[in-house]
Length: 79
Image (cartoon, rainbow, N blue to C red; front, side, top):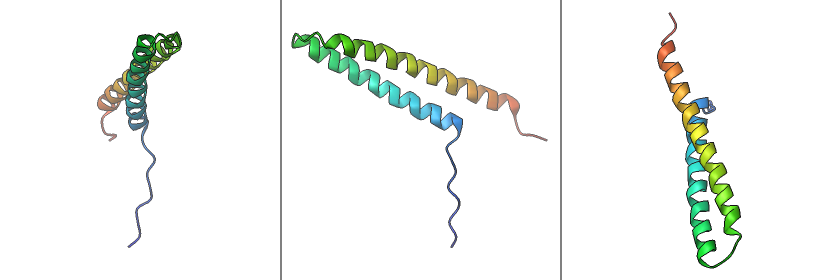
Protein backbone atom coordinates (compact mmCIF):
# COMPACT_ATOMS: atom_id res chain seq x y z
CA UNK A 1 0.00 0.00 0.00
CA UNK A 2 1.29 3.45 -0.81
CA UNK A 3 1.88 5.53 2.24
CA UNK A 4 0.39 8.97 2.60
CA UNK A 5 2.73 11.87 2.01
CA UNK A 6 4.03 13.33 5.22
CA UNK A 7 2.30 16.60 6.07
CA UNK A 8 4.26 19.50 7.48
CA UNK A 9 3.01 20.72 10.84
CA UNK A 10 0.74 23.73 10.74
CA UNK A 11 1.74 27.10 12.13
CA UNK A 12 -0.51 26.44 15.13
CA UNK A 13 1.17 23.11 15.93
CA UNK A 14 4.59 24.73 15.64
CA UNK A 15 3.60 27.58 17.97
CA UNK A 16 2.19 25.11 20.52
CA UNK A 17 5.35 23.02 20.38
CA UNK A 18 7.59 26.06 20.79
CA UNK A 19 5.49 27.31 23.71
CA UNK A 20 5.92 24.00 25.52
CA UNK A 21 9.63 23.89 24.75
CA UNK A 22 10.26 27.42 26.02
CA UNK A 23 8.20 26.74 29.16
CA UNK A 24 10.38 23.71 29.90
CA UNK A 25 13.52 25.80 29.37
CA UNK A 26 12.11 28.44 31.74
CA UNK A 27 11.41 25.91 34.50
CA UNK A 28 14.82 24.28 34.13
CA UNK A 29 16.65 27.61 34.17
CA UNK A 30 14.80 28.69 37.33
CA UNK A 31 15.82 25.40 38.97
CA UNK A 32 19.42 25.94 37.87
CA UNK A 33 19.37 29.49 39.27
CA UNK A 34 18.08 28.27 42.63
CA UNK A 35 20.75 25.58 42.84
CA UNK A 36 23.49 28.01 41.78
CA UNK A 37 22.49 30.64 44.34
CA UNK A 38 22.09 28.01 47.06
CA UNK A 39 25.67 26.87 46.45
CA UNK A 40 26.88 30.47 46.47
CA UNK A 41 27.68 30.78 42.77
CA UNK A 42 26.93 34.10 41.11
CA UNK A 43 26.48 32.38 37.74
CA UNK A 44 22.88 31.97 38.88
CA UNK A 45 22.31 35.51 37.60
CA UNK A 46 22.78 34.22 34.05
CA UNK A 47 20.19 31.51 34.72
CA UNK A 48 17.75 34.18 35.95
CA UNK A 49 18.25 36.14 32.73
CA UNK A 50 17.66 33.00 30.68
CA UNK A 51 14.51 32.29 32.68
CA UNK A 52 13.21 35.79 31.92
CA UNK A 53 13.95 35.46 28.22
CA UNK A 54 12.34 32.03 27.92
CA UNK A 55 9.31 33.20 29.91
CA UNK A 56 8.76 36.06 27.46
CA UNK A 57 9.15 33.66 24.54
CA UNK A 58 6.60 31.30 26.11
CA UNK A 59 4.00 34.03 26.43
CA UNK A 60 4.69 35.16 22.86
CA UNK A 61 4.11 31.68 21.42
CA UNK A 62 1.04 31.07 23.60
CA UNK A 63 -0.48 34.35 22.43
CA UNK A 64 0.41 33.56 18.81
CA UNK A 65 -1.29 30.16 19.04
CA UNK A 66 -4.42 31.69 20.61
CA UNK A 67 -4.64 34.35 17.91
CA UNK A 68 -4.19 31.73 15.19
CA UNK A 69 -6.95 29.56 16.70
CA UNK A 70 -9.29 32.56 16.95
CA UNK A 71 -8.57 33.57 13.36
CA UNK A 72 -9.18 30.03 12.11
CA UNK A 73 -12.47 29.81 14.05
CA UNK A 74 -13.71 33.13 12.67
CA UNK A 75 -12.85 32.35 9.05
CA UNK A 76 -14.84 29.12 8.93
CA UNK A 77 -15.06 26.89 5.88
CA UNK A 78 -14.85 28.50 2.46
CA UNK A 79 -18.05 28.25 0.40
